[in-house]
Length: 92
Image 1 (spheres, rainbow, N blue to C red):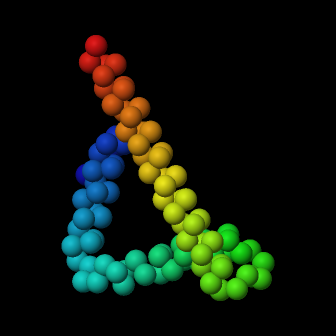
Image 2 (image 1 turned 90 degrees about the vertical axis):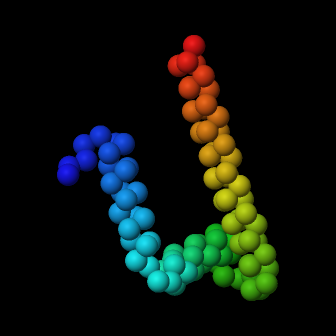
């Protein structure tokens, strides 16, 4: 079934993702490489020259990780607020 609209493509992708995760015996193992890569990215960002002691690099990387996720939460809240405002405007 060709999915032409963005909504249909999103639905097909969601079905595929759920089917894939249903066949995954160990979800943590499946995502381990991605989690490791993200942790390494924050460490590189915290200490691009690799000169800090490991404990200081880890401390800074943790703050960068927290900032990243808080930034994502803020954007999500803003998007939800805009969508709600748009729904209220359309209902008038």
